[in-house]
Length: 389
Image (cartoon, rainbow, N blue to C red; front, side):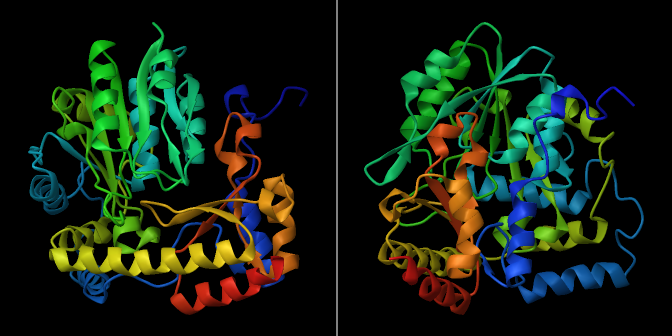
């Protein structure tokens, strides 16, 4: 055939960097600190809840399209208990095949061809692909390093809004930078959305992975935002069962109905037995979430200190389970070349942040490492990386 097989909207998207780097890790026997998945399972009682559901025949056939009632109720209860947000589990909660499908369904449902979508760059790679599939135009607003952290320029965000802007796509806590947007920053975003009559899709999958004095504030909890915000959550990051792919959205009935219209023609339904287990997971006591944060905070410190000793400039994250570093103190400037050579040089795999940017040059010298691994794995990685110093 003379015509390209891949449609033009997706022509810029090839094999993901995660697939490339994971294959490189396997080929070289390197420690994979690239892709963000834990190397241990989550709570045993939650895994057993999935086994119990399988054996009891719950979810082995198609679950209800919006998700099983038990999980929708658990999601609604979680939002109320943690954030004071009240949602009707029947009309305002939708279960999805992980957060990635929730993002895709929301953008496919809410974006018309030609609409502009503002996203904070660097951004999770599926954002760009989903905006493209919806026929939208992505407009990046860049988070920039400042005094050891990445910050949002609110004036730049305001200037990015035009008459063609349909929605803002937010991610907080933010992957890959580890930034947690403050209440003040989110209030400014909310005021802008109301003033310009914008929708907001907010990816909050790292909501429980915040450290030190950082606070996760759901955008929907701010005045005037509940009716214009689609909030995305997920079990994978919080409960360390990323392979289950159980996510959800909470929003007004009108927004949920719109997103469901797209979602039903994607996976239709998924993860039947796992939905029952996640419903139980969301009801775990607060001590579980406290312990999770404490353990990840210690791992963050271990990896951050090791990277600094190896010669990287380290941006200490306030949330997520990723550390962004600057490789220029090591005499390098090209993150792609650095990450492709790192397995041979040190036996460790990382991800070049430039893949998360439209403005590739802005992300060129930055590299991301994941710390959601066993302590002994991180210690070995730190030991290997020290030879770079």
